[in-house]
Amino acid sequence: MERILVMDVGNSNIVLGVFEQGRLRCQWRLATVRARTADEYGLLMKALFQAEAPDIRELDGIVMSSVVPPLMVTLAETCKRYLGLAPLVVGPGVKTGISVVTENPREVGADRIVNAVAAVHLYGPPVMVVDCGTAITVCVIDEQGRYVGGLIAPGIETAAEALYQRAAKLPRIELVRPKSVVGRNTIASMQAGTIFGFAGLVDGIVERVREEIPLPFHVVATGGMAELIYPDSRQIHDLNPNLTLTGLYLLWQKNRA
Image (tube, rainbow, N blue to C red; front, side, top):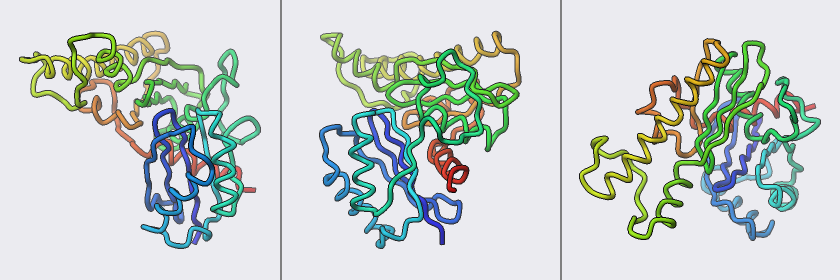
């Protein structure tokens, strides 16, 4: 039975998943801590695997994308030492099937390419991917399946934390959907402004992209914060929390030789 470990290394979280015969069997989320050593990450992974997949050395492959360059060497060493395999790292030279036609293709984050690969495979072009994490990124893939560019905005949690830190009388809030748009107290007002505000931000971006590139885009949202705004967005068609992990598995398939 083919078992592939996929690793999405983000600024806030490292998301791991195991695909068995093309299906996502299990997944975990670790905090991204740059100071951790290869041994510390190895012990964490070993503990996670023992809970659901006791024999961690039965893996057939590992594929990893990262937007945190300092962790690349650390996690590659973890994979070799504790999992017995060198990972396929998404970057230059990796076959993606996606043509990147931005001014500087090397600037495009690995996670955005991975999302584009999955979105084209699952939904077909033209498609837009809204990834809600530390930042909100919008990736635009045209009718020919080309990555033509995108947008980057502050993330939901990032903005809420900045508001708490910069405004002396505002508290740190739990990010949950309030009962109404008009808040009746400070916390509800901040929650409404954050959740409904970012749903509106995403909708506004998508509408402007459609005006500039008049194509019938399918819009899919992913990322740890996507479920917060998806119910109140008027432009997002689908919520797919596992889009990035799926893209990583597809890239392993394309590059397995």
